[in-house]
Image (cartoon, rainbow, N blue to C red):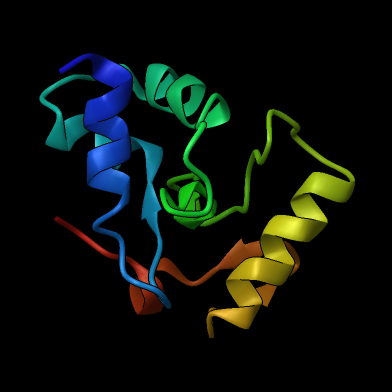
Length: 102
């Protein structure tokens, strides 16, 4: 199984109403290639089955969606996360409350 498919398989395990980080996904794959995780998710051909919208920055910031870093795509990511019950304030999520660890 290639790296991207490993990322997608892990991402499928993130439950609705929770988020994880690029760093946590990378660490679960025994790598420090956090950006490679982001690249895999940017090229996610299985959305929404692979819920890449549930992956955020370690700071709690909602970051990156559909290959975009801001604008309409981020607003869409925020909308989807909010519809799943995740509270977002100023494009930031309280990871103490919503973080999922594998």
